[in-house]
Length: 194
Image (cartoon, rainbow, N blue to C red; front, side, top):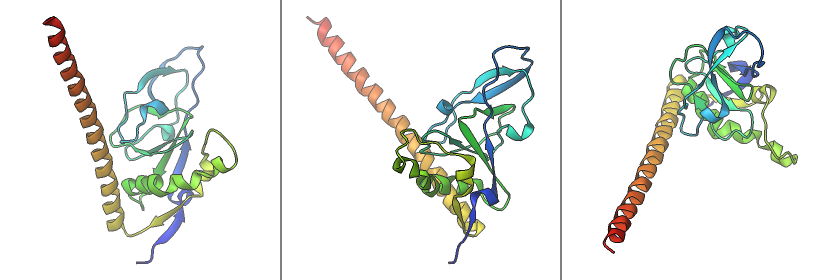
C-alpha cells in the first residue's frame, strides 16, 4: 500500500499556549488553565487550575475536544483531549495541535508520539540540556496519511495501549499499598505481643 506524506503544518493548526497573566488589574474573566504538570503519559488530564484574567482569551486558543497537547520542554508523550472543557486554555509551555477534518485525531496523536517526537531529538546533538520544541519545527514533521480505516485502527490501538498503561499503573500502586499494609499489620501485631 502506497502512503502519502504531508507536513504537519499542512494538515493541522499549531497553536501556542497563552502566557501567564499579570498579577495586577481587575480580573473579571474566569478560566481554567492546563499546566505541563497536568499532562501525563497515559493520556489522562489531571485537575486544572481555576484562574481569573484581565482580558478575554481568543476563542481559537481555548482547548477543544480532540486537540492534541504537547509540552514545549522535553516532550516524551502526547495528550489527546478526550472530553469537552469549557473556558480552558493551556500555558505557553504547551502547544495545541488542532487537526483538520482529513485526518483522525487519535491517529495523529499516535503518529506524533510514536514517530514525530523522535524527529525532535536533534537538540541533544547540539549540546542543549533542555530540549524545547517550536511551532515551526512541529509544522515540518512528515506525517504518513494512510486511508481513514487504517488511521482509525492505528488510533484505536494507541488509545487502548494508553488505557492499558493506566490500568497497569493503577494496579501497581494498589499492589504496593496492599504489600505495605500487610507489612504494617504483621509488624504491628508482632510488636504488640511483646
